[in-house]
Length: 222
Image 1 (cartoon, rainbow, N blue to C red):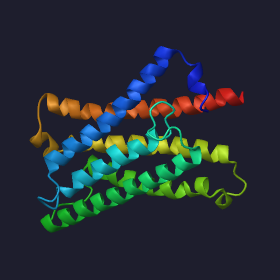
Image 2: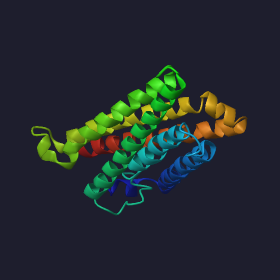
Image 3: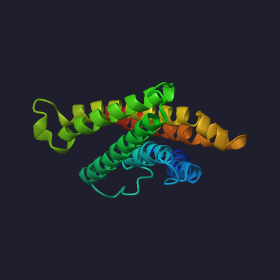
């Protein structure tokens, strides 16, 4: 797998590296923006956007980028080690998202507001459930003895495909969140569009990374 990028044109590799670095920057910038706007700790609600953004924008994105052949911060480590770090980041993602859901659920309870009454709430709940299932389903990749009769290659393909769906759900949840009354009331004009570009562009890069990785594997097999 490490040899594949070397056969690519130099400009193509440069573009991939630039896109990867941009994605690292975008997920951090978006997380910082939401943190500044939410001011976590100033109210119970303030923890919800902070924790959800930390989960789906920062931890989930970085967990996938660990496997990037172009911009992984631990590119020189073994695939097994990357898998361990990936699982840790995904656990942090699931933990933050669970806390974020608990916060907004309790906040709505205190204020007598209906639960999951918007697309943002429904998609967010569904995304958290999928993240939990995805994390548990990844255990056979760490401990292959749990999945007797399944090849490791097939498990990785299924995990990558379902992981991409999970990431798309997380990005949709973030985009719906910035359409909320809270966010649109806090920012306006070009700031909103720039904020929307962060998860949108990150999603395109992640989709490209996952699809190119497994298309390359298919070419090698053939």
